Amino acid sequence: MKRLQLGCGPNPAPGWINTDWTPHPGVDLVGDIRQGLALESGCIDHAVAIHFLQDLFWPDIPGVLREVRRVLRPGGVLRLGLPDMERAIAAWQRGDTAYFHVPDEHARSVGAKLVTQLIWYGSVHTPFNFEFAQELLHDAGFHAIVRCAFRESASGIEGITALDNRERESFFVEARA
Image 1 (tube, rainbow, N blue to C red):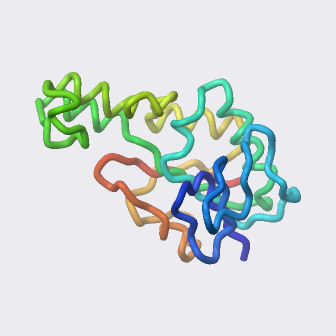
Image 2: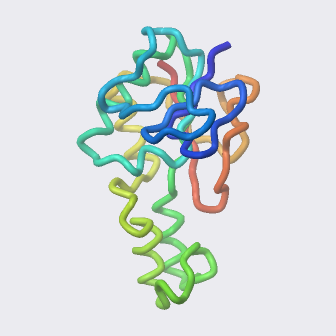
């Protein structure tokens, strides 16, 4: 079984083909996914991207999703973990400063914490909610798009949730190629 981790950063996973745009020990494919993946079409059984897509600019995301679909075998699964904009807004609305991972020395008010976390100090270029992710996945040719809980999968693929993290601030989506 071939498993692909997109945007692994300095945390490559053993037993996965790990990709990132910066070289780190254990990264198998170094490059900009917007330029394509050096993989044959249909060679990957499933792919996982945890807190990766939001760092891309919106105009680049449809092409990236099409490229991931290209390398997935027919019926292969893509699992996404994305920052949950709706959960962050709900925390802001109820005044829950403890929800945010932003220290007081960087932002004191709940509104400042919301904005800082949503853009994560400028590295987040595209905020997400489930409807937006669903639309982008559909437009890239994916189907059977479902929202999943942390460490739960609708795919039945063993180990597909192994890379899940950031439960409190994330939502998870699975889609089939």
